[in-house]
Amino acid sequence: MKIVVIGGSGLIGSKLVRSLGAQGHEAVPASPKTGVNTLTGDGVAAALVGADVVVDVSNSPSFEDSAVLNFFETSTRHLLAAATDAGVGHYVALSVVGSDRHPDSGYLRAKVAQEKLIVASGIPYSLVHATQFFEFIQGIIDAATDGDTVRLAPVLIQPMAADDVAAEVAEVALSAPTNAVVEVGGPEQFRLDELGRTVLVAQQDPRSVVADPDARYFGTRLGERSLLPGDGARIAGTRLDDWRTRATRGK
Figure 1 (cartoon, helix red, strand yellow):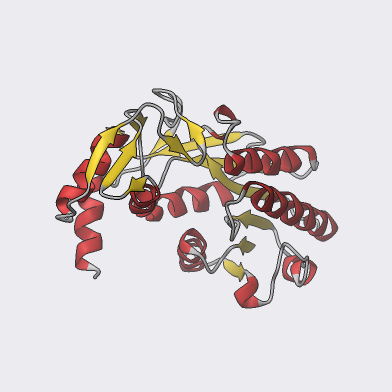
Figure 2: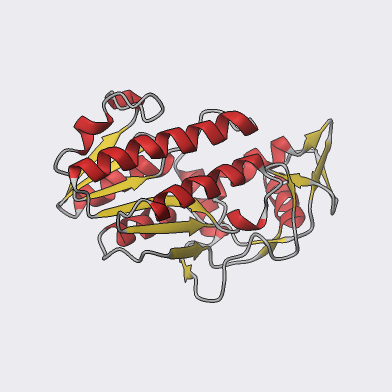
């Protein structure tokens, strides 16, 4: 099976290409590094020729509201047009758990816009909604830092390892289209502020974490459970401590 991975040079995409290739499939990474630019459309049609499945795990280079919306809308239109012409039978896109619950976030509004285009395209599809990645927790902490203080909302979060995200996306890509959302999440729930504090203590980082209900997350205020997947979500196996141990050994 030929599977074209849009964003195939990135964190999830590179793992996905390796996983699918190891299972005997023709996994083709498509990104600006391989001559495929979904924003301009350059190389998109050629990359999708003969593809059975397209998996979009790409991300915008800018999170500024108008830029990220333009990226996801323009890129998705180029991809869907090429996928239609190529007769692609399954279009898979990676998105975010709770994306439709946070209209104040420009990034999440853009992800919702992307999903709407896919659903309306007529191509059989599957939308994978994943919770936050362990790999991005540090970035969330840094973005919430003002001097020596980190302000994080005291809400629940259920993060997961990027390896598990890639594995779940691969499984969906190799299955029949769901024409629906598939939610995936990690095996443990944490308070976001407590998780930030745990990470900083483990790193012997002197910054202090303040639980702030008004703290923003990708530009939006969070509800108590708005970052959590629903009851029918697929639950990955990697716990935070296990991931941290592996990450430390890999340094």
